[in-house]
Image 1 (cartoon, each protein chain N blue to C red):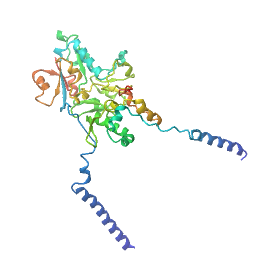
Image 2 (image 1 turned 90 degrees about the vertical axis):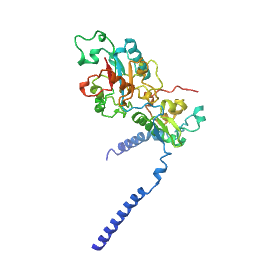
Image 3 (image 1 turned 30 degrees about the vertical axis):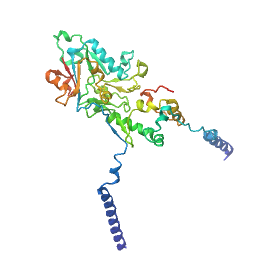
Image 4 (image 1 turned 120 degrees about the horizontal axis):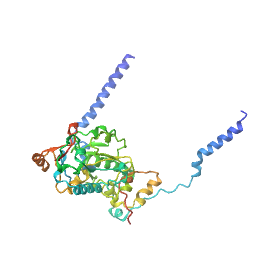
Length: 263
Length: 128
């Protein structure tokens, strides 16, 4: 009996070794089948016109802001992205909005605030933080950070838990308490709407950048908004940052916003 | 076994009720609908992939498109023949298949599938 067991184990061992080495050898063979059909296999790529950057950023020059200009920017953005305009203030959905200085920069107010800033509407939008708390909070990875720094939402994956809204220190996110479609005056066919029960926010016009266009708000800003690559030392935005003293919103929280303000 | 009769009658009623949908609908099954093509779709002859593949796998390809566009930011689809398409439901697909009721809904209704694409994506206006 011992003899047969011994020979069986030997046979099994050698067979296993043989089978293992066959697949190893096959993968080492040059020009195997996998390499040849890669070129013709369906694949995906970026659009040719796409604007790309290592980290997109924005500078808002409050010296150039006027109430009319802010209105124009909000309208351009909300039209482009099918943002609903609900009658009830508690259902408000916003991607870009205005507020007073002391609300935008709560730690920077003082009793002798410059005359110019009193009552001046200052535009605010998602800060596209480099260290975004909303991304950490999202349990479904519906909110994620792209390689170019844009904090994006995959509306398909949002379950409407609103953790991101609690995590965002800037109030940049809105929840669709109601079906947004009836509250959209004129639907833009180039961008989807949302449905009831999802969160939405500014996406730095990722869909426009892919077409080689600047964000909608920047386009109509008459120079008040500068948009560009923060990591390219030769970009226009870096030139503006070199020449001006800028502040970020709630800098002490460590979110490192990509939106800067010239006061 | 005093209640033998009652039990058997009960069982017969139970079986009849249980199998009711099967024999009631026997032989009246409607024919599977054929999706209708618009003139533009007919002229193009071929979709982004072979027709047989699209019939079977269009939901998979749409799912892949959506993930690749939203999450990877890659908006161009290059098919096996090297032809490029914008990976977009509302623009590319609906550009040819602009007859949602005749093309999408017909089969989806028949198969009792309720895709929620149009909850958000722009509803194509019926053309032709």
